[in-house]
Image (cartoon, rainbow, N blue to C red; front, side, top):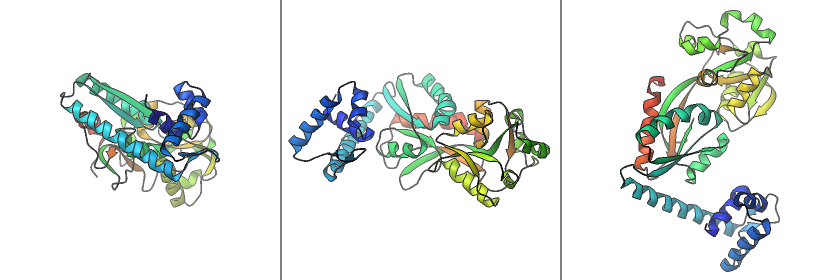
Length: 317
């Protein structure tokens, strides 16, 4: 393993001790290794006086160089693999927890049937971090929402509807019987019908919600939907993952903004569902990659496979 790998891990973890644990070496050994490089370069890479540690100005240049070298090495390997007609190679994919659990397996299974020689690695992380991983070439492809067209290119996969998952035990359900949807209703697509009744979110203004942390697409949508209904949601707890908020709603802890795809994939129990009245209740899922990067044949093949798997779930927009 190259010394730059150790230094880059310290940068990612912002800690010598955490990086050392990942490589199964002692912290003093790792510190000595980094110090030796700093002496050779005649600069200090890390500011050790801060907690967590940060990069010095020279360190920022050094890390940027590492990322550029990694990108060049990755592109070289991809171009060489392309000469092998998709018989060998590797793809690093990513998505938030829900995507990794319920979306990626469907694509990966079909891809593996056609291209068994291509190894696939799946990286999970919080939503705000995923796009940064894409920009640094730490991952090849990302399945997510709302890609900035200045930084990324993407292909549409499917549309999903934002709905409410409300614990069955809440008394509010007694007042909304005519609008309530069961999990079976979602699976049969009743909620997609124009005749399906909707609820005004203002009916839930006094209830407790399970809200995602800032930076998540669903947090932004929930905020807009509630504001349009004339209230600020009373958040019982803030969470990182959409699937976690859904599981907590099923456990009776509060109301969650989820999607029809999530609800029908996760098959949670003990919730009643409601179609929300208003705009911004549909969002599109994409598969994206860093703009202007070299797209290997393996990447192109995986993108095409993903589009084939979800073609029927893509509405006209």
